[in-house]
Image 1: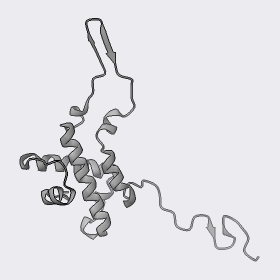
Image 2 (image 1 turned 60 degrees about the horizontal axis):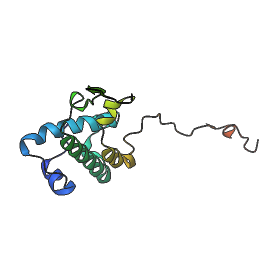
Image 3 (image 1 turned 45 degrees about the vertical axis):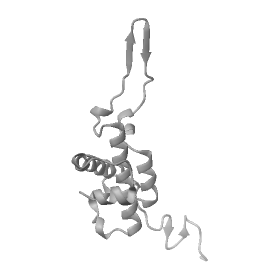
Image 4 (image 1 turned 180 degrees about the vertical axis):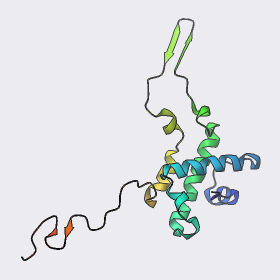
Length: 145
């Protein structure tokens, strides 16, 4: 993949500084996560041919995801596990069960907001001229028959 550069992250995005020795590892993890969020649409496209706006939004999303991983200190599901219950003496704590907790913890809301206007997260089926029939017009209505 390798869509992001340290120059873009540092100078365009301007996020929390990431040490050079950790940059590639976090960048790769963030790119994989963004590709997953877009239902792997990015892997199917030639990034260099995308409009400048979409390229910039994707790079900003990757940067936001990188910053998120760096600030929480992990970029793997194993590192995102939370304590479900704990007991110390007479004190007991139990976390409420949550669905897809790890998946949600892996994704930066800021990154998703950068991707929202690009259309890359769309997972539906594209239909041309829905409901059109040349004899009856749209949705079965009559056309001067």
